[in-house]
Image (cartoon, one colour):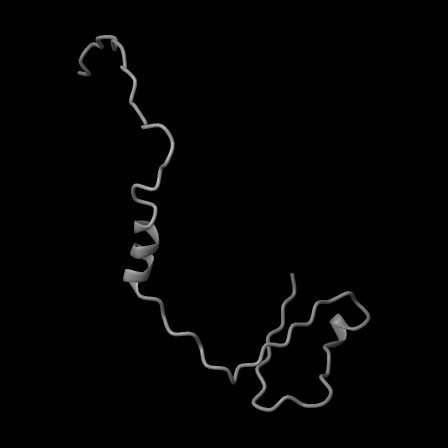
Length: 77
């Protein structure tokens, strides 16, 4: 995959394309960089999202069935 990234301080009216990309099917994405970046999310916010699932099961109680008998294995030497 050939990717080209170019950051402009002031976007011109016309963008010049490299010869190797001309007359080809390409995707062009323009992202404005003058917007403020969102503030970093705190760890506490993630913990609270997980906490809302604690005790959320509303069906029948989950019961762990008897595990049965396990075979006796020889000790590893």
